[in-house]
Structures are given as structure tokens and as C-alpha cells.
Length: 269
Ligand code: 15L
Image (cartoon, rainbow, N blue to C red; front, side, top):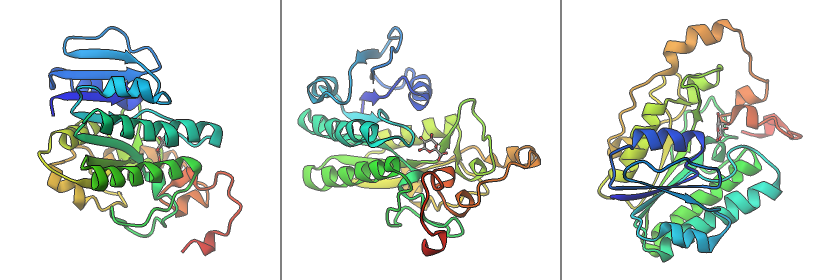
């Protein structure tokens, strides 16, 4: 994989990858609707919207691997989730297929499995259990990835990203479980891009946190060896006494789970 396209390159993760990948690939094409500044050597900068499939066909031309980060990155109304994370996501996969792209690395989220109980240590094979409309859109993206791998032969990795924070440190008690440092994110993405062969894989985007509740054994074959552990921030964070909401604390998705909540927590086994 030598020609890489990053959608959503102006976002927080996009910026970290742009910096971390500098000089690593012969072509790094950066795409966003937000200005990306001048292209450095080996970079191309594209202003395009994932809602425009023709523009995405142009942007994916000649590309080996797409890292798809663009879209709505938090919970939002359906008016945003539908065009950006459902239709926009489809446009990226479909444009990539039409352009003969070999691999897609999709930025999924822990909110695809957010309503699993936190007391349960879960792996990549658990059933989807989205905690929001945003979480549903990430389940959709993973399903699309599975379809494009099985039906069209693309190689697809879905990263259920935990908490990627700027500045680069966990900021609350839940992030002691879910944090992924910038350098671990760059390493994981790089492993997903560079690995010689996989068909379809789901992994957690998380650092080597002592308190993690995700079994990421499945990421080992990629050669992912996270270097950071949120534990070094634990004493300081816990001393702040920041308590999670009573519902949030029960589930992997944390603060997304009490949003609009009108259910019965005890019914969520
Ligand atoms: C995500 O998927 C979001 O993009 C981010 O804003 C955080 O909410 C993160 O998950 C998290 O769970 O901490």
C-alpha cells in the first residue's frame, strides 16, 4: 500500500496521522471540507465532501488504501448522521470499489457496542449494541465493510476507537479504560495499512490500558504493540473525584448511554 487517502484529514485523528505518516508513503492524499493548508512533499490536498459520490470517485482514483475518518464524530440528530455517516460512508466505500482501491480502514467507534455492560470484558466478536444514532451509524459502517470485503474482495479493517484526546492524555475516569494515545493511534493505523493480508477485521482502538475492558487479542496479528497505558494518569484523575453518571458507569459507551435515556437499565442484561 503506497498511495493512501485520508478522509477527514483536518480532524483530530487526521492531523495526528498526517504528522505521524510524514515521509512514510509515496503519496498521502488528504481530503476534507475544512482547509488543510499547503501540501508538504509527498502530500496532495483535496477539498471534497463525502456527500458527493462523484467527488469521492475522483479522490479515490489511483489510491491503494483509504483511511476513512470523515463524518459526524459525535452523537447528533438524524439530519447529520444520515447524510454524513450513512450516505457519506456508503459513498466512500462505493467510490473506492469503483476506483479499484484494495483496502479501507474504517474509523468505527466503541459506541457501536456501547450498551454492553462494562462488567463484561468483551472482545471484537460481541454483537453490536449501539448506544446512540451515532453508534448505529458505526454499526452500519462495519456492516458495509463486511459486505465490501465478502462481495467485492476489498480488504477492510474496522477500528472501534475508544477515546482519542487532544491534548494527548486521558481526562476522566472512563478514559482510563478507553484512552488511545496519539502514537498508539498512528501505530495501529499504520499496521492496518501495511499488513500484507487480511480480509475483514474488527479491532479496538485502545492503548495498553491496565483498566481496559476490551480484549484486543485480535489486533495482535497486525503487529500492534501499544506503547502507552493510561494508568500513569490514574492517581491524578481519580483524585479529582470525577464521578460518572449512574447509567453511564454501567456500560462501555459511558456518557453516550444516558443521552435521551428513557429505558430500564436493569432490562439491559
Ligand atoms: C467517539 O466515538 C467519539 O468520536 C468521541 O467524541 C468520544 O465520545 C469517544 O467516542 C469516547 O467514547 O470517548
